[in-house]
Length: 355
Picture (cartoon, rainbow, N blue to C red):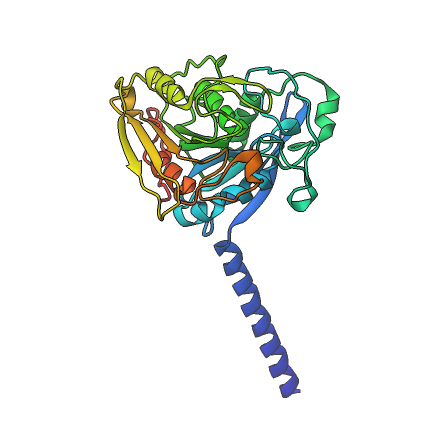
């Protein structure tokens, strides 16, 4: 009988230890949830990834990552590898999903004749020279069939942030937006339309659309990363090759943002050398002297494509160009964003921040 009791006690003790270890492990690992918010009677989804060691007693900066055309949230998560940085530096990473794979950037280019594409990873189709992950992308065909009205993505992102503020421990003064290609265009639109709650933006593989009207309520810090051999968004300006969207050059895009932020007229120029022979050198133009401490920085990767430097070569080079491994987009972007913060309103307290 005593032997049976000792056995039960040892079993109970072992179970308790296992449960305790499971609890500790759960708290230490990153947590990822899919959230939904209704916008104009359409359910919109976004993925929230809390960093390892997430503590509700702290306030965390938020980085919103906008996927490219015909991509999905997991494509953006995979090709950027941003989660690794988010865990290291304590960042809430958010991956919103566009309706039928396309952000509404406020322009209506003609619909292209979509060519047949080779099958890509996971059975999805390539993006036809634009970051691609699927023909329907984002929310799928259901929402598209309900009506042809363009999605109000600014309303979506605003309601998303409202909802997040009630569910997660976020520092509302340190919310940032980045995006790749069509997501980069959307990041620029967010900078123009949501400057009251977005501290800074970081478009990658995008330039300013010629028809974009930008009247932000405050000077917006901007860091841009572009490849000089981008086959999708021409570095020197012209026509974006997927939806025939007219864009100005990358250099003129940086100048436009510098003018919006009332920066010094001419930028300082530096270069980042390639790590080894045959690598990609990067030219850096920095506009300082901006109002309210804003800054505009443009990184031009020599020979780079419509890609995320330091990330995954997600499509063949013929389609999107080459991905530089000499520049790390995540580190470059975060080193810029981390220094930018919205002015805290009188009486507001964002609480203690994560690093």
